[in-house]
Image (cartoon, rainbow, N blue to C red; front, side, top):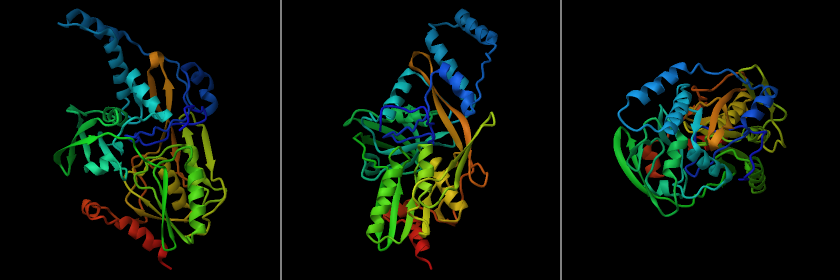
Length: 395
């Protein structure tokens, strides 16, 4: 991942991402620049101020009456965090300097040690979206759906995904203890951190059915998918399964490129700001898979950019959707640098499918619903993938 963050991009992933972590950010700006160019891009710029008399009253009362030492800097940080938390949006987050530095490391690819799991927020609690094959989390027995109740004996109540990820990551070779809830039962796992192997695209060929797995949408995904598809076609692929289970999203501008392998010059997604500005993204690139019978496999961990591609292929009836209802994230975030190295990630827009719908909190219902149980995982079976292959093999 390049260290430079381009202004033309916006953060588009599900809260996540990877305790590996891949944070997908598009569009950082200073406050002043944001105020100048925001209206050009359809972003409302609010210049009002808070009436802080009541805040001053609380502060003075604390200083006067509290029986103990008060750290003014900690009070200010707490007020900032409380203000953002009061919006009650899991994707709008205030980062203190430590968390902002950690997040920026993630952006530059300086991941350090991790466990190889994607973390999201479900029902206001941090949870495992999926584990990555051949990585510490999977080997230690961590499961998708596990609720993370604590990290290293510190309760995770109220934590967002970024804070959870920061707590879990660390130096290669060190351990992290996770307090979990699985099937309503408490469980503890101690996992040794390691360098994480997580290619964004992988593939397999079963007879004449090509299986392409997209783990995330990063700046290389479109090129990798196209190369992978071309290679599979030279090896005899006639039908296609696109596996995007557990893919929490990523770069917005990757979605039209992936969808463009099936769709020629079609509307893929519309992005709208509160101010009324609208951006329409059209499919692009060579239609390598036009006319190729396709199934898309998704689950509750499939979100954001994954849902954009899924919704477009479903809308234009070029693929059968198999698996479980998707996560339901129909918003776009932006990173705004603040003073003293702090940072704000704030929801700025919503995106809409070609039919005009927004999936936020609703998700996308598959055409063929197939679950995946713990017994399936333990037994090494995959009824969702089997159903997708069966779908494309039908006359």
